[in-house]
Amino acid sequence: MEGAVLWQVLIVIVFPLGAGAFLFLYNRGEKHADDVWKAVNAIRADLTHHKVEVERRFVTGEDIEKLRRELLEHLVRIETKLDRKPARATS
Image 1 (cartoon, rainbow, N blue to C red):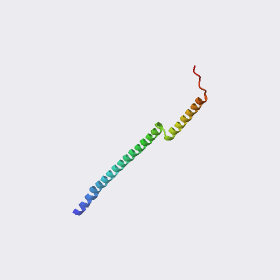
Image 2 (cartoon, rainbow, N blue to C red; image 1 turned 120 degrees about the horizontal axis):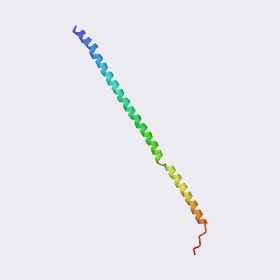
Image 3 (cartoon, rainbow, N blue to C red; image 1 turned 30 degrees about the horizontal axis):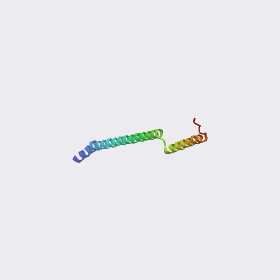
Image 4 (cartoon, helix red, strand yellow; image 1 turned 30 degrees about the vertical axis):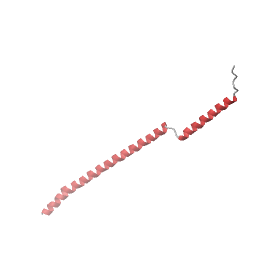
């Protein structure tokens, strides 16, 4: 008879408590994993925003080289025009 009472206690009290504890811990871990993924996605969005901001604020090496060439061409044209003008006679 005592064996039957022990099994009844196990079936009615211990097993449901164990299952409940397992589900509680499992769901808690799932919520924690969701929080981690939310944080990862937030960091990813911040990084993307930062990349766009950097591209908007800073120039590339190609742009600097293009600007340097354009300025050099313009200065050469000015120099050529100055060389073609006759020197003014000073009195």
